[in-house]
Length: 125
Image (cartoon, rainbow, N blue to C red; front, top):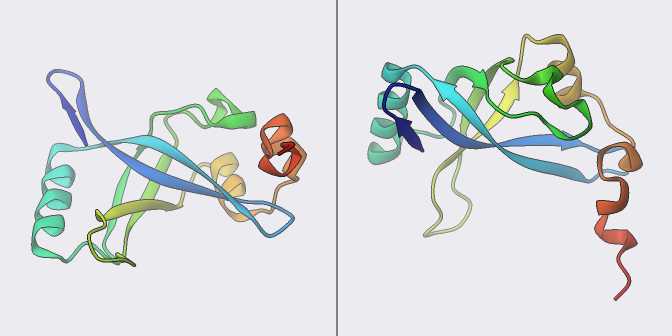
């Protein structure tokens, strides 16, 4: 989380992108949240009620091959359950009313398009 005086409140979250081969690429992105929303997020982290809770914000990153076309897209975040003891609570982008970002989240994408040369399966050991 980052609160920048005079700029805004930002939360780093996961943005999952499904690939055609069944894998999921996860980008870590910054989301702008209104002050009261970030306050509620913090309260829910502290009282353990974050999982399942939804928050609305704006995407503050250009993403992979879609670039700046998704910048400032409205998003819905959802608090995720902690799967292992000692882990930090987090949120994930689960939907968007922005047509392209909704497609990014819901369609399965060709590996080459999303990962290109960065596909770990292409690395020689």
